Amino acid sequence: MYFWKRLRLVFGIAFFWFFLLAPLNATAQVFYVSPNGSGNVCSPSTPCSFQTALNLSSSNGQEDTIYLMAGTYVTGSNPFTYSDDNHSENFPLSIEAQPGLSNEQVVLDGESSTQVLYVLNSWYDHDAADFTLKSITIRNGKTSSQGGGLYVWVNGDIKITDCIFDGNTGASGGGIYLVTSNHRAYVFSCDFRNNTASDGEGGGILASALGPAGELFVQENLFTDNTSKSNGGGASLTTDGTLFVERNHFTNNKSTSQSGGALFVAPQTTCKTFLLNANTFFHNSSHYYGAGTYCMENALQNCKVIICNNIWAENTGINGANIGGGGLYYSATQSAQTHIINNTFANNYGTWGEELYLAIMNSDTSVTVSNNIFWKNGEYFSIYIWSPDNNGESGSVYGYYNDYAHVIRQYDSTIFRYDTAAWDGSDGNLYVNPAFVDASNKNYRLSDTSPCIDSGTISESTVSMIMEPLRDADGKKRVIQCVVDMGAYEHGDYWHIGDYNDDGDIDGEDLATFAKSIYVTTLTDKFAVEYGHHYPPSCPH
Image 1 (cartoon, rainbow, N blue to C red):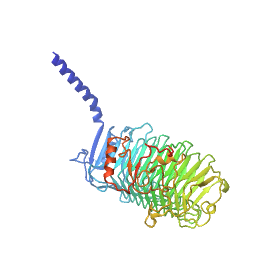
Image 2: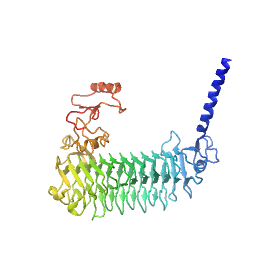
Image 3: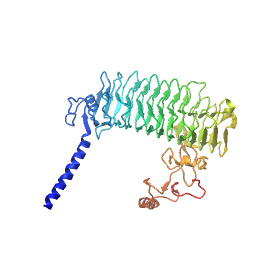
Image 4: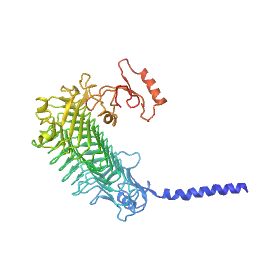
């Protein structure tokens, strides 16, 4: 009798879990498609067409994954389309290359006649309509509307990774037009090249994360040879919440009639954090302001703005007159607290602030400019500040430990267009050649003889901001033995002792790394305990 009671108990538990898990397993459906697919089986052995899979996934009330087999998928006269017309799809959709394939092996092609991919699921009561695009090439899209390559507007998280957007044209958002509300959007490790916004913003991408909970992350992408008629030749980005732009490379992008040749960013009134970190801006151009980057900061006082570890070099205003900020144009219209720290500006051109233009339009605004290098061979003013003395209503601008090199007149009349009581720039600044490794070949790292080595500041006003990104433009730890260099690159190579594997703990694995490092170093190597775990008495924290 006891045996049968146990058996019934086992079967009862088994049936309980079966009925509990069966609906969960049924909610996920996988489709396999090929360029020549047919029917609606959509299996690995009998793939369907891409549009068939999109149609089925837009009406089945399930989470869906579409795997694209190798080949080129031609749109025909209409774009590939996913649209929740029935208001039934509050579920994630993922479109990916079949596992094992690279982004060059799976191509969606608009043949320069139509938009390539259109995804719309923006019902206000849908909060789980996530969208993922992974390892796909989208090319030759063309539309007179938004999003020549990809148009995506969903009320869920968006993840676009390891994709190529090549030769697409749209009125705005040539490569991508992206919108989400109170959700996160990630654009990671993608290649945007030769895309055009023919009548608006964002040659490579126009992305908006709306709502105070909106978050936008644009990281480790390439933007090359993209063009916009309006702002943001490479990218135009805006959010009401959090914006991180990190480790991207912008080269040869252009705004033909407006501002932000490479990048246009506009954090909005409910902004929480804006981080512009470790990006490179080379050979970009704009008709007006910010040939490298145009940033219009509309954030409230509680927004944390950090611009650090970036390189702006050889960016040019193409209008010739009334051009501001050949490298970076920063306009603060609200009372945000802004820190421009450890950047390198070199050989940019703009008639009003060749390297940096600060338009401080609110009396409560505070901008700190620290540990930067401004180096040029031009004939105009390196930095221009719109201040009370030149018709602006400026807040405070503080300049500590910067290197202002290759200027052709005296301090007040050359670095700044007008003397201004709002500027406090007397502490720790240098006026010498920074001695880059090879500026002619875009190597703006510090040579062994650079006066900028160990010449920065980690005062109480800057240390927390420096430590936030933790690493320089090369990924090396920023603060070594309580000192910091000027510019985007920390000089030299170090073995970093402490949390060596960045797992959050100092443990036996880190000790083993330390022990091993002793046997492979020479007497000239340097060791440093990672700042953040052990504080020297003289180092502020």
